[in-house]
Image 1 (cartoon, rainbow, N blue to C red):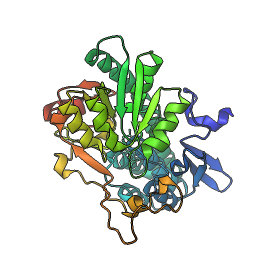
Image 2 (tube, protein in one colour):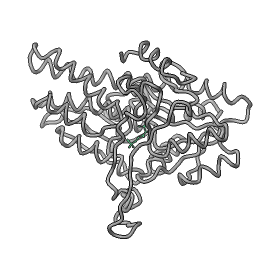
Image 3 (cartoon, protein in one colour):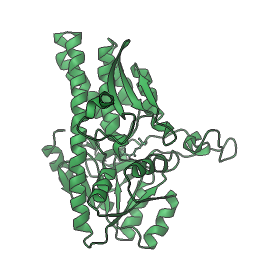
Image 4 (cartoon, rainbow, N blue to C red):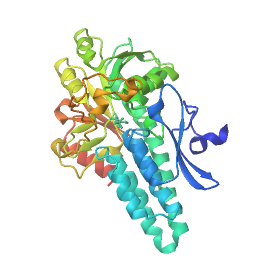
Length: 369
Ligand code: MRU
């Protein structure tokens, strides 16, 4: 059993199958993934022996969530190198597989740069350098996760004094399924739970692919959190009833001006939170900040097939919820402007208020720039 969790002896994995793992097999190295499309029904391991298989896994959301996409992208470059494939071509394919989460490009470039820097020392050494870079990113992400949990809990305690415990609303999935560690926003809720300060976690189901219902509820249940699932459009009535103390979400890309791209449905929550004077807190590692994207309007938002809305795959095979031929609008993300964000929590600490200057200073401090 111990060898099943080779990359992360340091923590207690809440899943029977590792979320992501580099493995040696008789046919050469492979990347194994916990197939997130099959959760919560079953924990199935997906084996990627080449980059096209990994690209498919990324595009079908078998592997997903910004930090994990970065780790997967880095391992993907290492896989191409270890198997003697065209590393430059693999890097382009991986980087283009999903456009919004900047962590993916970050991870791919990190491993590709390491490979290039060692290219003069022979193919084996260069492949080893790419794998070392991927493992290092994986390890750093786990560290960032626990630092964010600590900073995030301290912020909650400061924003929400009083002994009754925090009632947190979250959207999409931001836990161990998306990270080398325990995640981003979910890791903060988990820390609050462990400290006896989580009164309840409201989990948005997250249409159309149900990352909240299928994945966050799954993680919450496995960790013993007090949680309640709601349809996305029920959030407004919860705010009206005064049942939400804070909103905690992750991010896929944070622009230089502090605009935050995250799972579609995040922006309406930010508007609700502002109206109801509830803190709206974004939790993301500094690898999610993209100083090269000037503002929210410059963030490329992935458009997904309309069929995910008319025949939602997460709802069960073959269920059709709209008449044949119905066109559907299906952006995977939306963008929240900085003035609606109370704070951004990274492994470096808490940024509040969220301003372009603050983001620039954060980038200068972090390892990223
Ligand atoms: O389309 P997905 O499932 O990859 O979207 C994931 C999200 O939007 C998460 O909230 C985001 O990546 C932050 S995860 C720490």
